[in-house]
Length: 113
Length: 116
Image (cartoon, rainbow over all chains, first blue to last red; front, side, top):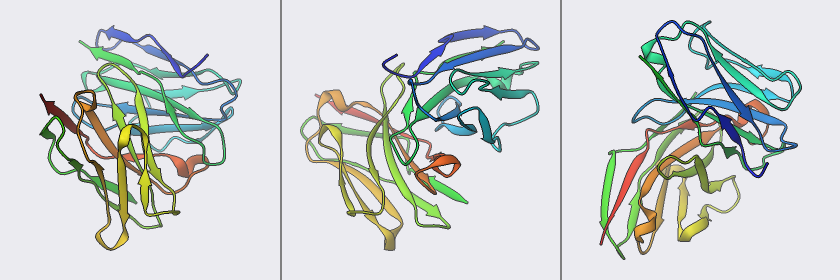
């Protein structure tokens, strides 16, 4: 596709429910990032993939958060047993290697009620 | 460790007036610095980036920023504001341009309003 595509765009989950957020990066992009943006805040880094390898997951806030990119293309961010504090916009971004521009998707807006 | 400080959460200017959005950074290594813009319900779009070449960086839509190491600043300016510039602006820093080092640390963002 022309840009980074994320789905669903909007998700309302009941507290305790599991959710899965999908990211389709730009074709051929090696690097993939997930960020979490709470209301009124800047995005915060969650995790980084180079192809299928998850090289940095230092930003994942708890073991309820899990991300994968099994074939080095599409990535899924999974949140188990959602809590109200998980309500945020989850942004996916991708780039080619070697210092190219990082392109962001429009985000998946998660509201936990 | 890196951090970005964007003082204030909201700036309002008149159409045609100078835009100045402030950004100060902290980094233990030579930084790479970025300004992103976010329009409502859209993703982040790169305005410009500093990658240790020229200290005055020109970006899209008439914006520019100057890297001042002595002041640890990377303020964003535009000589004449346009109504279409109304958006949220984020300053960000990274330790590198490749791999995991290219992960971005963002400031809290500044909302720019433009008055007719």
